[in-house]
Every structure is written in structure tokens, then in C-alpha cells.
Length: 120
Image 1 (cartoon, rainbow, N blue to C red):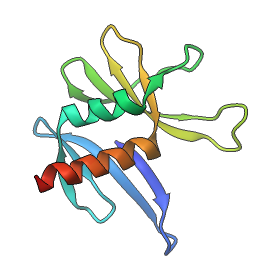
Image 2 (tube, rainbow, N blue to C red; image 1 turned 90 degrees about the vertical axis):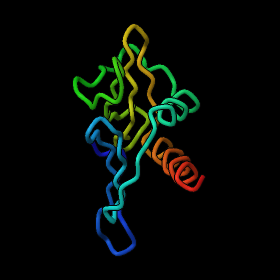
Image 3 (cartoon, rainbow, N blue to C red; image 1 turned 135 degrees about the horizontal axis):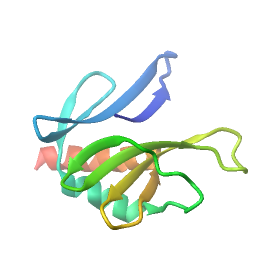
């Protein structure tokens, strides 16, 4: 699942993916570098920066299962005040309201914590 994409200085598109491989969560950077991501790190970031998704916004149907009863979904949403749609990561946990966080915020915090996690 693409969690962030941006235009690099050379004009190419850089994408960051989050996937589940062999029951492990893996983040793949724009150069193909792969880093393991602990579920606790994802939950910490979304609980810190996420907000409940407004009831009027439809929850995306599909995503990736990152834990038992826990899915991460991608949402592209354009509010009336926005010139363009924005990308959001949406955490869906059974029996709880979905939490949404802007993808750039989610990815930045996640990359920082994953880097810190691998250095320790």
C-alpha cells in the first residue's frame, strides 16, 4: 500500500510503501530500501497524530491487515476548502471509530521512529 508519494527534485515520483510480508510489516522507501516496522510504532503514530474520521466521510473499503482485527487503509479526500485532494492513512480497529492522519505526517513520523528503532 502506498503511504506517501512526492515529486523528487529530478521530477521523478518517489513512493513509500507499507506492506505485510511473511506476517511482518515492512516499509519500502523510494530507493527500494526495506525496513521492518513494529505494529506498536504504527499505533503510536496514529494515536498521537490521528483524529476520528468524520461520519460523513466514507471509510475506504480495503487496506492491509497489520494485526488481528487491525487494518490500515488509504483515503484520498478533498474537503470543500481544499484546492486538491489530500491523502490520509486511516486506522480501522474492530469496535472503534476509525482514526485518520495526513499521509505526510504519518510517513514522516513513521520513518523517524523506524530509523530510531533500527539504530538501537
